[in-house]
Image (cartoon, rainbow, N blue to C red; front, side, top):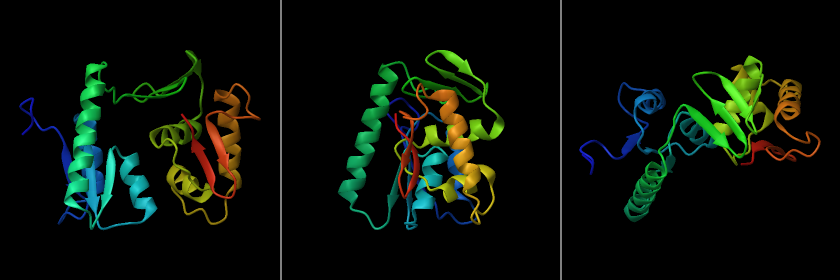
Length: 190
């Protein structure tokens, strides 16, 4: 129980008997506006990316120091307190820089002007906005957005990245937001 009479933070172990921790995180995030910290022995980047993409605020791998856990909890509680004082966290919107994505309405605005996106363009932008500053390989993006094993189909991702740049960047040949990390993939830079 928290300071406000409800829960202030959820510490969620992914390895729950009979439950999918990722699905539980996603379900909790739909209704709760509090920090969710995932704890697990899984150390693969794809698990971390998946957890953060489903709404977790942090991902802590076992083993960990109790003092580090306490410090992270305090940091997340302080951050949420600051956000609430500044007007709250709107889980229906993602905004980084001048790019605003409204989830329920499936609308995207850049510098206040609405941009029309096709389904996969929208899904790709939403995924990148949900995971700022994280570099994703073409294969990972293909698997996450199209839902298939990449199997060498990198051209599709490149085409959609270029389409998104044409629609949201002021100068698509010198992108500010969707950046290429040579030899690694792409990231959304806020």
